[in-house]
Image 1 (cartoon, helix red, strand yellow):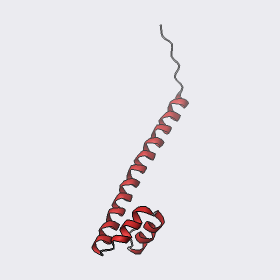
Image 2 (tube, rainbow, N blue to C red):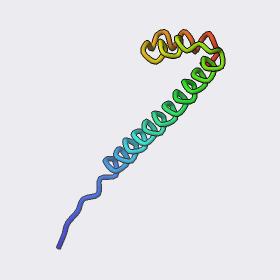
Image 3 (tube, rainbow, N blue to C red):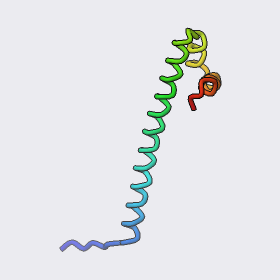
Image 4 (spheres, rainbow, N blue to C red):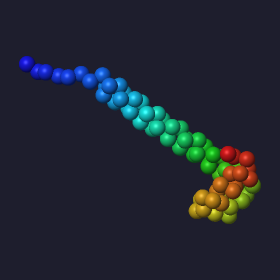
Length: 75
């Protein structure tokens, strides 16, 4: 005969932790997709403006990248 103990509080706590983790993962995935879209938009803007040196600089320097995103209103 197998005896098991049901702990309602532990079960609910586990459900909440699982939901939080799932939400975090979903948020990260959404954030990454938005970041990629912004960087793609910046790349297109820089290519259209023939600012190839700025594109190369932005790929190597995150602070410069942020400056360009702001300049083009991509935030």
